[in-house]
Length: 429
Image 1: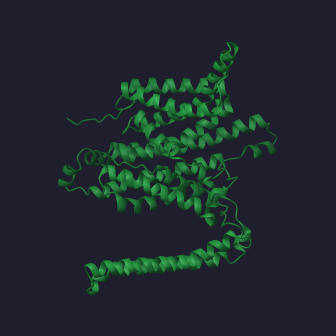
Image 2: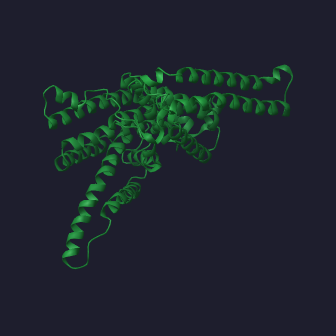
């Protein structure tokens, strides 16, 4: 297995060198930064599915949360908003939210004063209604005011370091995953998948429509880098070409360091008693429960851990492209592709997830220009023979990415059904 892994990673290295020679170093370095972020996200899914067997199809929602978090933390401060009545109005909305939460909590504890059964249920429904009306009565005027010219259009950022935004993205994703997990982890696997899809769409709808907080479809740009930008290097006397390559190389180095630390930590955890417990729960949760393991708590644990990596990975991607556009998130790019990375690489194996993420992302980004080159050649050849040119080459080339992705899945599952680098469990004799 070690020899097979080394051979595959060696082939991947050759592919990267060929890509650099054909597409150029700046293009290749950018794609490698994105591949590192996607590898982090794939490791998060590998924790959830490969370690615990949890079908999370809400990956896109956690990526959007990470992107919104780093935007909020690192984007420059909006002085118009902070100098207006917006902060005070948002403060009142937060107080209304807290008051509503206390009302709901009190209704849920009504059995302590003798209210139980259907009366408690009715009281809880009424409490939720009152809390919602109370919160929206404060939030809606605040949102309308902030989105106006007097309120600055939107909240803006805090002007913090992007690394803090990455951390906040992970923390925010963890909080949402905890709430989602408490609600959904008792569901059967197929229902869990459906539930996480729905929650992901709810998150996307919220972020796209909260113009006062995220600017919605108006997008936010430019988002600062955690490393020097090419423009900063150019100000120091470096040429444009060298500055582009150097800046991306520094960002890539930072991404690799983060990825390496995460890979080392989760590999050590999975190789120890915690990993053995997770494998036991994944393989037979009934037997694990009979041995005294709190299966639901452990599943919630890995669901939160995996979501943290997804949030950080989503923040890294948004920082690198320097734009937060909620409309750009699509399930095929930000959920289905991640699943393919883990399936093709090898679920339950961190190195397999890493390999699959880098390989599939490079194939995804290269397949379009490669298809375009093939279509252009065939179109020229076809025109010379009087058969006419191929129409809509740009659109057809973009669609070929899905075809190539499906072809890779088919070939990989035909010859390596457990993944190119499958999980290897060492049995103690």
